[in-house]
Image (cartoon, rainbow, N blue to C red; front, side, top):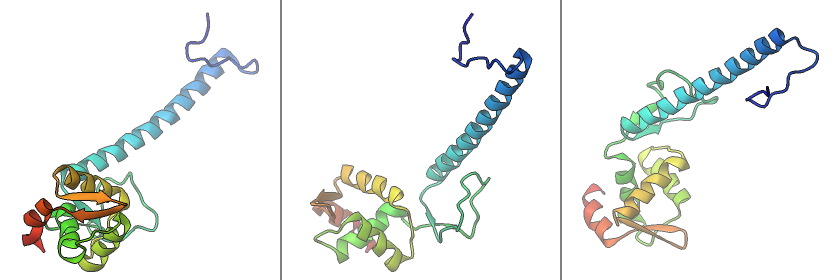
Length: 152
């Protein structure tokens, strides 16, 4: 009878020792997966709670922390999409690259978010036809200018 997991029984280990070793290995991997699931739960919770921004980066991020420290996170009025439009509509009618949008958000509004948080918001705004991208520059569309002009 073959081993269903594809592991070969080492000739140096007795069957009971092999089983004990495999259990330890599997338990360690399960703990790592549980930690990763906990991290994903925290990420999902942050998304469900609304836009949360990093006020300042941690020197050593701890993605498995129970709750994010209060000093590190804060809400942004109107969310990331509103701030993007506050940057694009009055200040950059000809558009700007995503990286520059991030810098402008930080300089003008004190909002420091990772690039990975900006991209989904730009995509959502694009689906709403509020922004368009051309030659790597994001710009507000006429609909976007009309919709978000009151936010500037």
